Length: 292
Image (cartoon, rainbow, N blue to C red; front, side, top):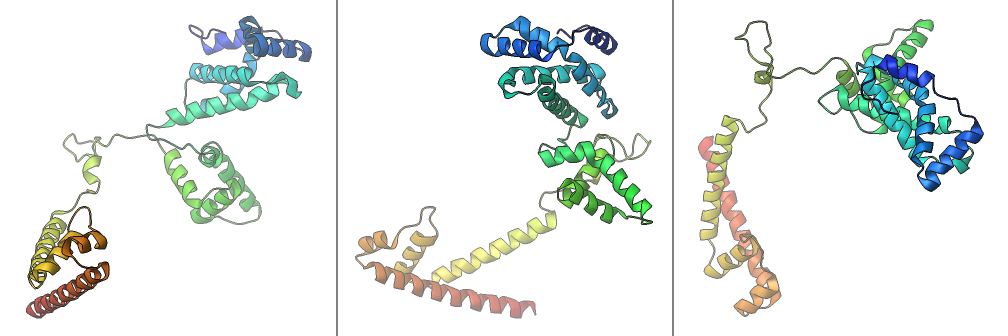
């Protein structure tokens, strides 16, 4: 069924004029499409159930999408249903198609609700389309019991009702609370006012932290240089090859090069580290004493 050039009223009138298929005819058309890819059978099947697609699309108008677009998405879901329908399962096509039509419309609504992705999981989709209804039901039931729910209690009850974490409920409340705003919009009506983007916290390293980090890094390098100077040539070589190279040497390879056993190289490495640790501790104490 071609949709281009039709208004939603025109499509509705055309769909209402379509034939009503009995179970036997529906089965025959579904088999003709499945077994022989008979496009005329597909067109007849789709046309007969466009009224179902339009009816389901109309239930999503409150989300602000154009009706023509909703009907287009509903028709796509209907065609997917026709392509995947197995007529031998003993289920009427309309029963099977409802799921595909609804899924297609819901995906479209969520994709176009916001520039920021609203959600993709089944739990997020359930929240998006049921949050307000579940909140209203829970508040109504609480009112009948003479209770008043605060926001935290309500979110916990919604999370339990829908079967999702509480933080998902909080996130979806924020997504549904209003439309998108540009970060370049001004915070006041004054044209020279500050833009919202100026109020965002800078994720980069702050100047004070950068200076402090550079200072500490330079001090640590000085300490390490002095600690290395306290080693003999062979110990410095082992430490450099084991810890200061991008690809660390193995004890075996160093032992073969130096004419030592693997265990002896390990002992020399341990001794070098012990010397360096004592040197670093001494320098650290001297710095703390100076600062004190």
